[in-house]
Length: 94
Image 1 (cartoon, rainbow, N blue to C red):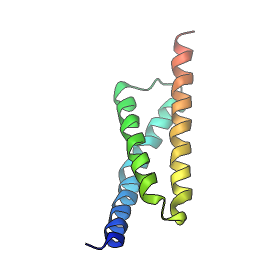
Image 2 (image 1 turned 180 degrees about the horizontal axis):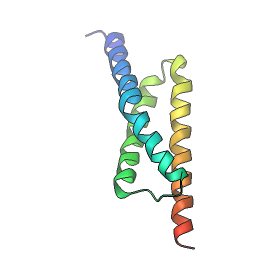
Image 3 (image 1 turned 45 degrees about the vertical axis):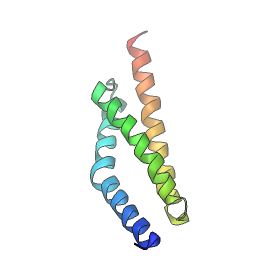
């Protein structure tokens, strides 16, 4: 199979999953965290898997500079969520 075709199909699938599944879920987690809730064990597992997916996507996107912005925004969103989760966790222990 043509490598470029395979890569393009894979990228399309990754972007579709990002749009329909990943972003809605991580935005919901972020909303709860922004309201001061602690991250649940399920949230943490989902975010850990998401980071693995993000690394895979980054590898796919490296040959597609037009996707760099998407990758950077998703990475920043994960960073913001992680930072807020740590703040909320610290607030419950002080």
